[in-house]
Amino acid sequence: MANLTCGLVTGASSGIGECFARKLAARRTNLVLVARSGARLAEIARELEAAYRVQAHAVPCDLSQEGAAARLVESLDQRGVQVDLLVNNAGFGARGEFWKLPLSRQVEMIRLNVAALTELTHWLAGRMAERRRGAIINVSSTAGFQPVPYTAVYAATKAFVTSFSLALEAELRPYRVRVVTLCPGGTKTNFLVAGHYGMQRTPGGLQDPNEVVEAALARLDQGGGLEVPRLLNKLTVFIQRFVPRRTVIRFAGGIFRPEGNAIETP
Image (cartoon, rainbow, N blue to C red; front, side, top):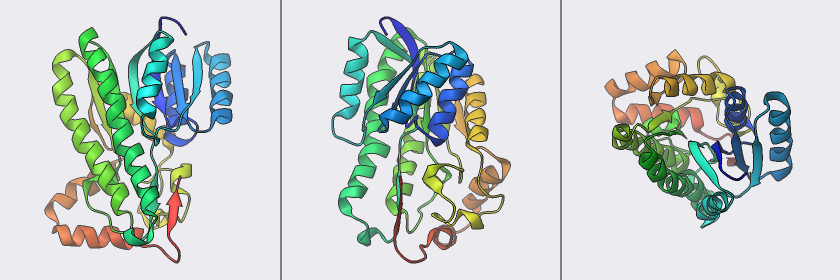
């Protein structure tokens, strides 16, 4: 991998992350794929190399562990890898009453959804700014636009990602580094298995992850910015500005209220 320029995709073994890997490979982007599931990552990497004649390297790594992001960047430096595109996609959520969900798992969620994303961005954004080129795509969620009962910590982590990413875009724009803040609604992935988040009651249903990724890459091609895929999601985000906050929270809680036991989504 010496002196290789590539895109780094976290959470690349399934769902939106895997779609990013496939779409970027189709654009002839060399890739470093990161996730916990090494076997699946290796399989995807082999498929992409064969189909698109790019270099795709599987790097098993649990970014929810303290110090994992720094170790990942150090290992890439040792191999001479230069990251020109960072896709911060790794994350998970948990559904249920906050005090009934395991505290350790929710702290792990904060480490992955917030700390690891922040650390990777900090390590790599400065280098992009020095080179006066590069791009970052931070995968947030429409859940980050309002508090969401029964998935309180997850929604709060995504509120952080959205705010952080939009601010970062303004800071990096003078350095010609593009930043996309991607806020999809419910998407057909392992993260939102049918019934887990009550999304079967959402008008319009779940989005295809390819649709989400295509919207993100189109926004990247336009120079970056906020991307909320699908018109219905855009309208929902816009309209809630004019609705009392208590009403928005009550509506969100009605969608996410668990039926029975608390459910965690990997």
